[in-house]
Image (cartoon, rainbow, N blue to C red; front, side, top):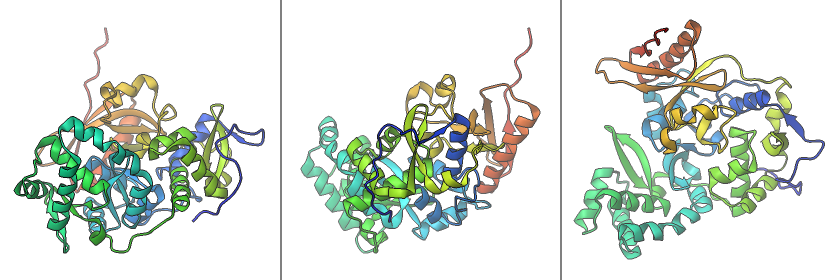
Length: 393
């Protein structure tokens, strides 16, 4: 737990604040994101290590969430990750912004308590839109709680059948809202998939020994974890990521104490883990290399301003139409160089690569090597398909 301090945070940088050039800032971010090794950043040895480092990781897409873990755990396979989730090293729930994240299992309760109030406050408006009343939603939570009691575990379809048997409409958006509401209330959580299907369990039974933090402890913890796993970041990224207000996020940074340091980035105050800043050399730029990242990864989703990693001109290629659906990315030397998608094949992993810039033979070999790591994670043979070159006129 970080110690308290009265050192002001979130104010304009002082003359003593370190000014970070973009390349150094990007190098620090890659280290924070566990995508580039650094002596100041512990090498994760478990799913628990990774998720605890981040505090929470985007996981609305199950497969993307698994690879977000796998890409940070050298030599691991998808079976290794799924076994760790069965050991309850992490779980999926809606801790903030009404979005599914992977969180440390024992931290789920305090995270829901800290960041779940705003989504719950907006639930009434969503129910009004759907034509649901609060009494029905609360009854659905009771029905699911009773069905799962005693160590039960139901698939999504079984949960909806249970609601239907109790006379509660669980079709379409009704069902999604009721399943979300039960987890947002801290009654259920998303357990690991079984035979490819999402399952639910009672949170108190799945995690019988939760960590409990008071509000100041929770604010300090989430602020420190976000900064150490994403920094350098401005205050606006912390508010956007947590869904908390500016005042609460400033309070969290103050309480994080000497664990975080204020710097200047693009003329604005930003925050970075003190140990990383102190250990990294002044020219800590991104190392050369290629990464094949899932679409829903903290590499992009953890930030409001993504210009350090992604050219604004390429944003629509990664998030078509700005609809919130992120394509898997090819990262070259720290910046997005293209996207990739899975093709269909019963016998192998087929990947269609879509470069955003001209590529060399070395570039293609670099991405194919990164994708080979992904194929090994899935235990599949790999085939990479590149677009045909445009004929010269």
